[in-house]
Amino acid sequence: MDEDERARLAEFVASRTPALMRVAYLLTGDRGAAEDLLQSALAKTIPKWRSIRHADPEGYLRAVMYREQVSWWRWLRRRREAPIGLGEPMVSDPSAQADLRLALRAALRQLPPAQRTVVVLRYYEDLPEARVAELLGCSVGTVRSRTHRAVTRLRQLLPNLERLELLR
Image (cartoon, rainbow, N blue to C red):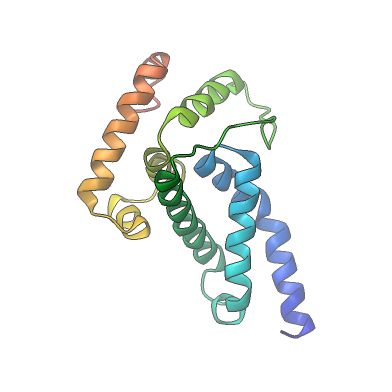
């Protein structure tokens, strides 16, 4: 990789890291795991930079993150371990709905990793069911059932969300 390529790569990483970290945090529910997820995805993406730089490098990197997260939660399921959320939120939220966001984040942490991943892809990333199924390597029906179970659980954990019409 020549110097111009390195400069473009460095600029891309510097400009998109905050947004990518937010997605990674929503997927993992833990700041350290989010940093690991993004780093792992970058490590897999950088060698392919030449071939993806003109297409959609962020989309490619996000897809790698989703697949990595699926691999991790499958591995965790086999190991019977669960990550523990420690520390403060990565990004401060200056909006008036900070309390609601904190409550929603806490509720997301209580979802199983597979359900949390589907919720992030469907509602935060705004991906259609077919694309989520493709990214996770499962059927559209599985995406629908996981989404239904996750939203049902979130409604139980946060009944005031119904009033605010966030999950309708």
